[in-house]
Length: 284
Ligand code: NAD
Image 1: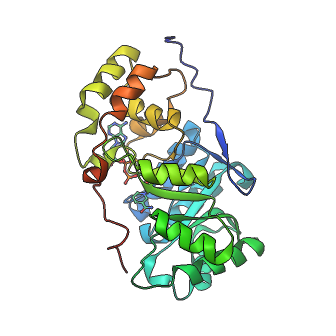
Image 2: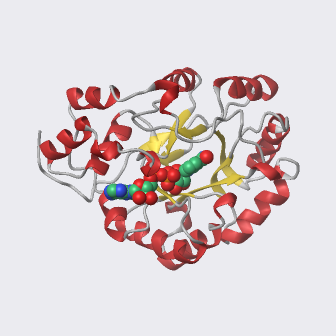
């Protein structure tokens, strides 16, 4: 295994089922305060990230847009995702326009239905609107978040349009194997939220992670990010600390071995590993 670090090499771009591409590693901004988001995203863009994951619910789309404007980078070089919140399934177009206004952008690269909210029963109608948004050029790609295979099947059967991505909770304790198999067979890219376990359990202290970190002279967080990348998921770890933001992007100079990957795979707890809400109970 080489110790050589090439921090200038960036993430791969993953091709989506609509022909667009997305950088496999990005920066997430959940729970970053509105007034510190621009600084954090600015640090991320300087470090080389070109993919930012925000949402109306996070209340910080404005800061994301400010950092993009201040960076001087061409808009088309940055992939921006936002999401429709659960209480806006009745008026998604107004919600999308509010999000674009807040971010000061003409379009999002990817727009997601944040949760299916099956009891509300509107997600098929929302998906039809999303198809219109894409046709109108307000968004380049459309997808969903926290959709189970049953929700995916419902919208695909109703419209014939397969989401480009499904963004779901996914980390070593909760590996979403069934969902990943379904997604693979339908050419849906899987995005991992909470990739570092959101600090809700001691993922970074587990033996396979710590041993791989020692073997490669990297941090446990870098090992877990590398595991996501080598397992093919798109991900966007969050941090407000500049050192962690840079560290989490410095993952292209080493590679986990098959044995190291298998050791981390073995941390899967199946459904017991879920730390966040179940998609069928989350409602507005
Ligand atoms: P995460 O797994 O990225 O964990 C973030 C936490 O890990 C930070 O608060 C920090 O304490 C710690 N951390 C980060 N870098 C570290 C490092 N190098 N060393 C040690 N600790 C480190 O959790 P997240 O932010 O919830 O998830 C990532 C992104 O996923 C979010 O910011 C958001 O964009 C998205 N997300 C989406 C949904 C959804 O429902 N679609 C839900 C949650 C998160």
